[in-house]
Image 1 (tube, rainbow, N blue to C red):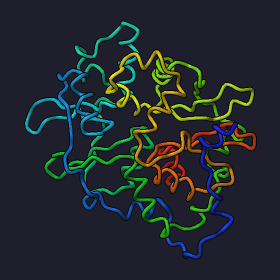
Image 2 (cartoon, rainbow, N blue to C red):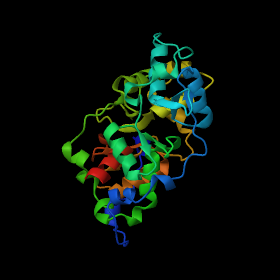
Image 3 (cartoon, rainbow, N blue to C red):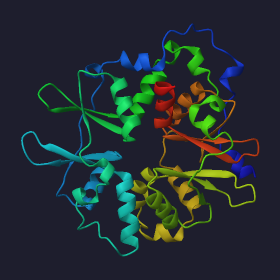
Image 4 (cartoon, helix red, strand yellow):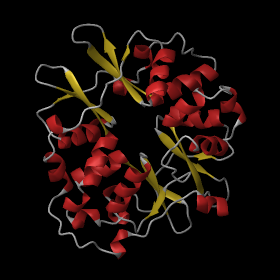
Length: 325
C-alpha cells in the first residue's frame, strides 16, 4: 500500500558507489583507541533512590527526556543498585492496567528487572571497546564508569558507541563498512528469517505493550495484518514516556490501535523518521550505522523482496558484528 511505502526508508546501497577513502582500522581497534577518560560526560547524571516510587522515577524520565535511571542507595558515595529502564516502566504499566500493580506504591528497587540489578561498573582507565564488550556480554544498553576514587563520573549509552563509530566511519577499513547485511553473522545464522516478536497494526496499544513486556524486548515491528504481513511501523518501549504524559492517559492504551499509537507518537520525534526504518540485504554496515545515527533510533528492520520483515538489527547487534566478527 502507499501507506506502507511511506512508512519505510531504504537508501541506495553504499556498495554500489564505493568511497575513495583509504581505510585504516578495524572497528574494534578504533573503539580501543578511544579512552573513557576523554569521552564527554553528561552535564548531569540523573538518578533516583531505591525507595522512590516508580511514579516519581517516571516523572524524572519524562522531565529530563531520559530512558534509564541509575537507582542508588544512600551512603557516601551512594551505591548504584540497579538501572531502571523504560522496559521496567512498560511492565509496570501493563500490570497496573491488569490490576496487579500500582506505580504510586511500587518502588524503583522493587521494579528493577533482575538483569539490571547490580550492574557492572567500568573503570575510566579503559576504552570504548571495554564498554562495547560489556554491552555484548550483558545486553545492557548503558555503562556506568567510575574514576580512581570509585566515584561514578560517566554514563555511556549504546548510542554513544554508535556515535563514535559514525563520526569515525572514514577511518574504518572498507572491508567492514561495505560488508553487506546478507554477510552479517546474525543473518548468516538464519539466512531466511530470524524468529521475531511482532504485533498487528489493529492490536490495541495495551496489548502491544503486553507483548513487549511478556517477551522482554525493547521494541517490536508493527505489521499490517495482510497476507504478506508488511511492515508499517515500529513501537518502542521508550514511547511509553510520551503516552503517560498525554492528557488522555490511560484511555489511550485501550482506545488506540498499535498503528494509531505509533502515528500519534511520531509527532514527538524531532528527527522525523519514517514510522518504520528499514533496509535490504544489499545494504551495508555503513548504511546501518548512518541510518541508526541519523534518526537516533535503536533498531532497523531488514526486508526481503516481498517487503516482509526477515531480521532486526539493533545497536548491540552492530556492536557484535564489528567487535566479534
